Image 1 (spheres, rainbow, N blue to C red):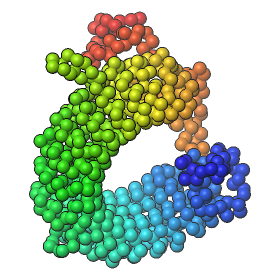
Image 2: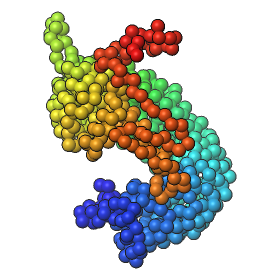
Image 3: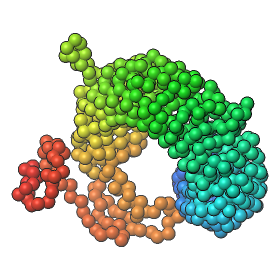
Image 4: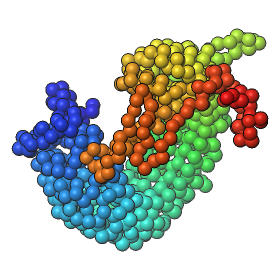
Length: 601
């Protein structure tokens, strides 16, 4: 819910209070009333103002006695002026300033001594150095601190040892050394530690034993190959590492991992790597991009619910090892593997609880849809960039043509289907109209035209429709009657559509977000002229004036130009002929060597 979980009459009041700049100004003067606003409602109202770009520094003052959480992530205009007001918040316990590029060391001085603050996120604030961190150290009650990808050094990291209440620490992307990590062993309350991209070695990793409560550890992109035994660890990320042992030593208490992230890892001996790891309770395993050639270790992971083997060596000969642990699987990603229809056949009947299946960029064909239709719990299917055509030939002599997408009609729970970059044509689209529960449909093909778009109008629950790269005409779009539920229509790459027709469709269906190159161009120019927010504009650029959908003036600072749509000179058949011509046909060597269809006045 947009009002931050607040509904009913209160939700409508918040909606009215944040409608526009004028309504905000009306209640801004009622400061005493807002000071008595319950924290939940104050938080909801503030979030709405931030989303609608209606918040400005001095307006923060009316929330200083009520708000407990503020999320300003990615707001590039937040600077020292904003921090001056934020520093006066009496009950604030969570402040998110991640990606606020204007925050620097001096701005952090303004939060010095905020005794109520327990969570602070300064991730990717690239102007923060060791000097700025010293201001943060005055907030002794901090329990969560994120300072990844800042300009901190190993010396600055060592200063964090004074924050004894820390339970979560994210110092990823910072050159943390073994010595710096060793200085943090006094933080015995740590439960979550991010060290990705650091300079930690195996010697430094040995210090991790000094964190008795550590349950989450991220060592991605490090040179660590061996971990000490960490019995409390439940989630481990060692992406892009070379792994020799996940739990070294001979202790009786072994690590009982439930989530393991190993994308792009190199594992020479799988048995040795998992030797001291209890995997019976593992529910999440990501080994995408891994180079291992044997998946026999999966046999012990009967509780797996999420398995990602995309871009791995998985093939039809190895898929049985996945099928053996398929009873509890909810998510399975086999994209970019050597799997074919035969492998899907082996899976059918073994993954009855599977909800999400990705077979993108595999060698499956339409016959695989028969087996996919035997997975009754599926909610999401990704078949993009496969050999799916939408029809198959059956019978003794393969002469009986059948529409293969009909095989999905029994999947009553199916909500999302991706058929981008397949060979599905207009004649094969009709069966999709019977997937009444479908919310998201992704299509991208120059085999599709107006006929397909109109056939999809019967999908009464559709919220997102991707119809990219299709041969969609202006009349086809204007005659399209979208379902009332549709909120996003992606028409990028539909090169026959003209700007005025797309704009006309947008006006007729204002509740639908239309994505097309012409719309994107207009929005880009408008953003340059208008600035990102009316409250943070420093230079007012002249606005674009329009008449009958055409631009009449160029933005200040840009040369004036006019667009002439050359497509209007050709018929639809000629345009289709142009699309199929090789690029070399358009080389500018003079009119005599142009393709015949282009030789027009």
